Amino acid sequence: QVHLVESGGGSVQAGGSRRLSCAASGLTFGNYAFGWYRQAPGKQRELIALITSAGRTDYADSVKGRFSISRDNAKNTVYLQMNSLKLVDTAVYYCVAGGRTVLTTNYWGQGTQVTVSS
Image (cartoon, rainbow, N blue to C red; front, side):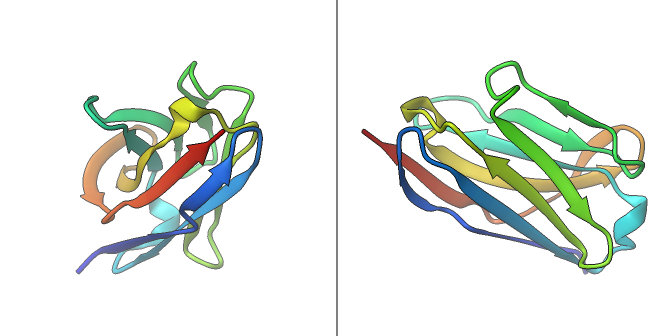
C-alpha cells in the first residue's frame, strides 16, 4: 500500500521561507515522478511543481523562481523549498506520485496547511 506523508506546514510571515517534505512508502521511489499541488480556499487545486524520475523539474508560473522541488532517492523523500512566500501562497499543499517521465496523479498525500500572514 502506497503512503505519502507530508510535513513541514505551518504559519509563516510574508517574505519568509518554508520547506515541505513528502515521505513515500510502498512504492519503488526512484521509478516515480512526484509533484506538489495546492488548493487555496475557494479555488481549484493546482499543480505547482513536479519532478520526474530522472530529476527533470517544472513549475507553475505563479511559483517559478521562488519554489524549488527536489528529491532524495536514498531517503524516499521529496521536498518543496518555498522562498519569498506571499499571502496568495496560503493553501493546503498535497504531495502526489505517479508516472515516471510524465507525472500522473495515482497517489495523494493527506495535505499540509501553509498559512502566510502579513
